[in-house]
Image 1 (cartoon, rainbow, N blue to C red):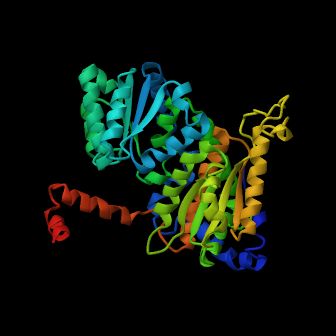
Image 2: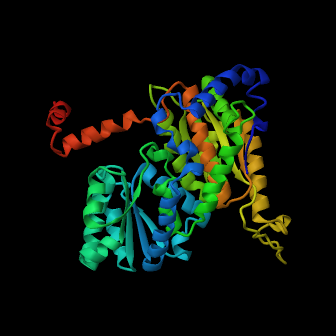
Image 3: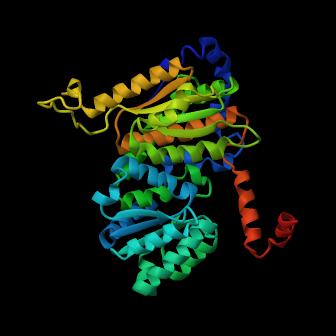
Length: 439
């Protein structure tokens, strides 16, 4: 179960603060629940854990089983929401070294235009049997389109066109777009990116479920966790709802000049979840010259670098710590006959216990240093609880965005760099844009 703990905020926010913002949070929550706010045509994620396409999900499982049996290497091609969620879940549940211990090995491509990264991946492809999942609503987004062209050509050269087609799965639009057209022409297995779910909210759609199923993740438990949280909170628009409370805290602190949120965690496996969170909140709230800047730190590692700034730097930030109460690992420190490193005082304690003490000590220090801190507590590091956590963040992001008075479900700003890039690369139709850029 996921809970939100505000115990460390008492010296920063008062009961009166919460009383004053309660109605605003209630209205934002009701707006999200009833679908009456801006961007309401992109609310498919809200009920998805319960109302997903059961037939398509069964086909995802069948396809995943086939790919697991035929592949040593599985490459997910996508950018932003088309890969971050799946990678975040995979690394949290199987570890950053999952490719050393799990089969098939799962790699991610198409999230940059780096020649060296793609060249390295092509070398890796020579070490086993390869399959691809290309994820793109349109099929024309530059980064994944370039990677797919290169990797598709590789598969055709290696396996021939017919066998290559069996090793390519497309996750794309239901009925239109260049990737959908190619999938139909070539006979690729295809799954649907729902029209009413934006990329950053898509991890519980086929966008995330297929790669995770191929990797051996319990996607049933992931969906069940999200569904159970939705059931618990859906009709509660008050601050007793932990989602609304978190959204309210974020906005109260923002209005008090805390413009940066540091999402911290004491588990290195959480690193990519931090990246997913940054896209979710950054792309949802950062518009109209407003928004909390989302950042992340991995403790205790970053306590030896960014920890100095968090503790003692400018006071424009607040911290939200994700704490896993059970990490499923019971490694402990043993007593040494000769206490050569001075660690015998830790003998008999598990690393999990020591990590929890380090977490508590850090929170106390940061609060003493003037940093408002709160905790998202997660019972266990497993698929069910992670499903809850994903839905917690998604729902909170919608409520928080409405409290900021922005549309949390569009992303007009990301189109500017694309237009400039197309113009400078001489893409047809962008001639006038190029003239303006070059003067």
